[in-house]
Length: 100
Image (cartoon, rainbow, N blue to C red; front, side, top):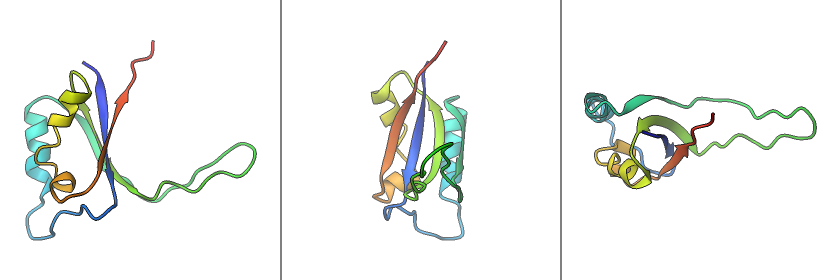
């Protein structure tokens, strides 16, 4: 089963803050389904090139979740309950090709 990245964008899709962590139930559901492969918030960084000027980092990416899914459409179904997506934000889905 291929792996996909769910990339959260910083475009106003922040879940409402409160006492409860809105990510915990979503991640627990992915974990229970056996499809969660990992993930994290994305912090500060830098782009580097051996020669020439490197572009600035992509500041619009705030986090990622790696999941297993049958195909792109199956990966889309995993957005249900994603706090960033449910708050109206953008989540980019990218397949991780198998290289051999």
